[in-house]
Length: 292
Image 1 (cartoon, rainbow, N blue to C red):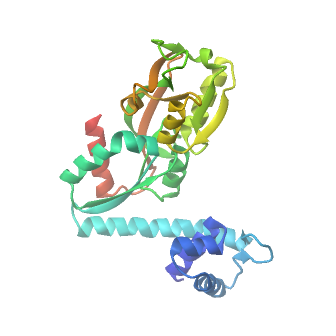
Image 2: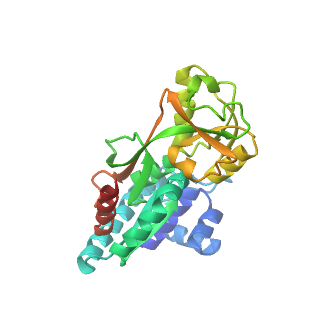
């Protein structure tokens, strides 16, 4: 079996589209279709049901997809083993980071880490924390930084940061001069939250519901700076970690501690359980642990 053919088929299955897969793989659609067809001929089965407009896998296609991902992951691990052996103190890694966490902590971490390990190549990939977990579990990321808690049967976890959440409001808001706030006092506010790709979305809604109300979410975004600009235009309030207070203009946006209940923001570095941990990943974990 040609590994390239298998990778092409896996991408088509993930994207559920030859067009999108060809764009991701940077090859022409006819070439991609031919490669997948060659794989089907070699295996003597149909992998894709071509009778409908959308891409659907046949039963055989589902099996090849599931086993193919395992094969590709095993080959990636083999490459990592060999790379570590042949290039001592060199390596590469892919880290998944939600934009907010990346912005707050990782510019400094990456800068200092590169001074210590200049031969290690780091690829940072921005996803919401929910997707980071999925990609680490699939083996597509070496490390992920997420909001806790996570399923510790699936992941090894290294605690990273612990903070409290704060309410962020426009300076003219009636609550702007408060020294602290109770969550139940926000039941009539208009909220601006991260979208559903982010753990904070579900977490904040759940915290409000525990307090006895369903928040009025008027806007959602994947960008913290866009949300802060919406607050600066007095279009709503939001809840962010306390570190954000150092990033916003205090003359426009006020940060108020939430004390009843206090909402923690605990971050951790996650690895897929039983997956080979490369030299590069080990050093990053060691460095992050030393900065706590």
